[in-house]
Image (cartoon, rainbow, N blue to C red; front, side, top):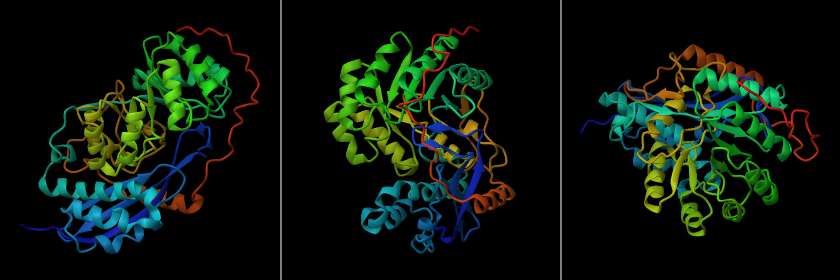
Length: 399
């Protein structure tokens, strides 16, 4: 059998502007996201691309150290390369970052394999079940949309522009009473929408239960990490009866039996970033299916490269909810034909490999932007306790 050998590996850091300074309990994204790109070049001239990140730090220094583990190896032998670069014994000092380090490498290898064989990644993995994937609106407060009225106006623009029917609201930024009002106003504006509420574990248990009971009658798909800790989620679930999702207390395969046996959650929000790539996400899918737990799709933010990988991952049969994506917030992209959200859906790429074409001039542009701006921590954590009651508390909004 002819082998395609890895000739070189290039790792680049980029920063891409985003629309607005998005707020969350940890602070704000300061108008940009940082991504780490991996380009794998083979001796046959076939090149594959992958991407990780979406937060404030580049993983390039760690991935750079793995080059020697990859060069000279067969690009088709993905299982062997995972063991060399991402097994616990070979990465003792950065275990917590292993999934995010492996994801862009695996994506680039699958891109190479799909291109070499003339098939898309989803067909390489057994075939796609859907032509397009439904995604949710991801609504963040910003410094320009702190009032109920402004946030609802902004959400209406997003929902109507892209045709979303599922709305994810980032909460935990302000006092719970204010965020109850936001959800009620959005539900009145979009009576047929489904809602998911994500405070990133910011509420204590009594606040979370109060919020949940205050929203009776609204179509809540689930509460995502309303409180911190597995036992806190279990207590919330028992007290409210709402569906509970998480991407904090189950982030590794060894966590899954624990949350299952404790009855702590209903939905685990996986993604190929944090679950060892596309293969890892499909393994998570099978694991949850066997236990009767539901599968969702988390988004740490992505350019068109990681979005394509996510779409190929999302064709698994038991993905029970619309997928999350920050993609609508990117001001620009590094692929030549950016994906479109139409009627709340994004088409699964059908071209060879990932199905996207990299724009090298855009990569260079945003490499330079990264050099100018660098990494960042979340900035200016919001005070969720002392924010005064806002004047829009009991307002009614109508179409």
